Length: 349
Image (tube, rainbow, N blue to C red):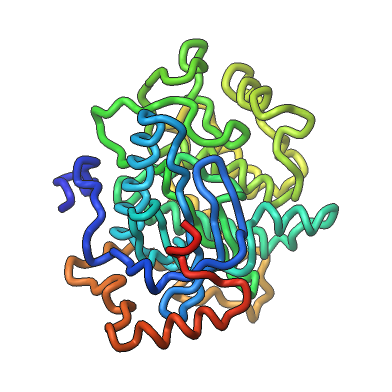
């Protein structure tokens, strides 16, 4: 249940039974990614191609508890909010290991896509279109009181046709409240907002107030990267970049950009979070700039102006609509085994 301010209380984080997947119908293929908290595999679930995110357990009880909390938060948020630019949630399970199953996006990460293009840049209209996808996903999260806290190219995946971007990894996402103190040093240094730092909060575990505008700053750094196809804060380590942004108000240069784009960037990465625009405003600014790039016959489709912020209704069938009946199980297992390189989930974990 949502609270009166539209936020989902953290104490309600739990795995709704309707989102439970049947591990016997899950098959795991090659590893396609790995991070500090999880490994991601290509997989199949009821003959649907999926991404299987297997969470690391943690090396000690305290770490295991933290990772379970991260898992439950991600599952809760993924299951309650959907949008065309958020990765589609399919289901999850906790035994024998913690697993999140989502749609499989075959275009790879935005990070890999940009690196493969270098030294070439994205065509401006493509860069802005990708930025719009990201801004719409963030507008959806913020409209439901959710701060992503780790917006960066590694957490943005392309569709198979490489024409759209979807946001993934809500493991660090938190619901914003007026009273909650949140942990600093959350996210990835190079893309993190300066208010996450102070001479005190640079020590791991300290807490301070911040709000959803941390995502706006991160978006600005991602947008800069889309436009330049260079690593932001080149020549600096991640920590050096964070220090320069926080204590020297240093930002990448926007001098070589058209005035309207430069204004979007500089407004989004302002030092004062309250002076930064929200994502609804950012979307309108990007659409206006996109219209200046378009030839006379080019028309932005009407759906581009609509926010598709949808919360799954309580009656949503979720994964239950994908679950196989008992009679189907054997056929599904045989089809998955016939796929080269795929193994039964239970045999792997």
